[in-house]
Image 1 (cartoon, rainbow, N blue to C red):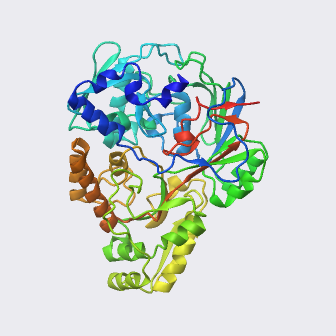
Image 2: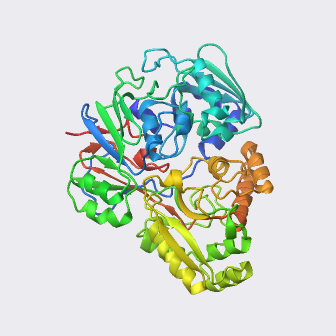
Image 3: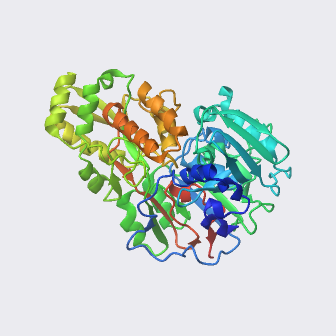
Length: 536
């Protein structure tokens, strides 16, 4: 099964039905190309030490220690409630989804054998028949129906509740077939269901103090804010996987401490490596740095519902204060791609190349500050190492603002608890957004008016209408135009400032095999658990 991830969705056994007929092929083509296409798939950074290539023969056994940048007492084993990289990685240790995104961001089959549709609105999903949960019970359509429907229950607190409401009817037809009818067509359904929140839990599960999934590892220990330990699932449906006997996953929020733990050999894999640490890691013979191009970004969030940021002229002024080239070269050490205050990366097929790049312009910044009445004022701006390189970006922004007549008072707060105590709560604060597989997902999760993670609290009816229309549009020209128009609206009106798309930088012990780049995020798009091995 390891080779399965190398094949496109239409080459997999059981998924041929999805490409039968012209209309189905058109829909599939849209699905297969709907993701963010990385300009480069990523690589070991120049100067990195030797690491085992993806083509090496996997070894069995061993225990892996993985240190993540995020973690708190809010850590969860409920995939619906996951909210950070540690939650996502932990979820993929213990659960599977119906589909899974590969390195080209093509949805491939996982617990599903096929997705079949004629109109992108009514879908027939055939399920694998050889899968069991950790407690030994068989995986059936009832588990899928329960898992997907629970996202629509407000009591669950699902982070993708808004997305789930698209699924109007979810019903079992027999033991291994599920039919889904959407409120409106969405050609991205297989990609949407590949995200960690939609991983499948056992029918009727309400207690998530442990995890009864179908994933490669079974829960041996879980202490929120401390660690999770998984032991190899001996009944895993992917023959021969996982390779490791055990994985211990825990957080070390401080980046320097995380790097030191790797260099001392105390941990095997770390994520969210600061570019400033790259040369130090690569100079150590036991460690290797891995860069992945992605659509992830560090953004300054100006809350629409707080204080001066309600003023659109102030928002425009702030966007002109971003010296993006300087930020990329200084704060990110050249790792990344210049962004234009919207979340679609230049290497995405829906990127609007006609939208003028927002330029660093002190004169325009001064003009809009004057117009907003904020010139000469002093404002707090919250930064933390929890949001990658936000402290450095804030310092550069502070200098620019000073030249334009605005005093930004940087409030540097601890990484621990940042996402609970500050994210989307401060009038001006930084965030990190992980790459999402489709334009629809990133817009739906972070920019739609009633999205749970609408970071700036932005409300725009025209944007919402375009989002809904684009979701079901199978004409590629029309769809690209709609997503292009949405980028214009976000660029010109939304209180989110995105200076660049970040490269994802992981680092790992050179004894690790099978560790490869993934454009969706660190930890191989959080899906490393059943793909890596220890050479010794």
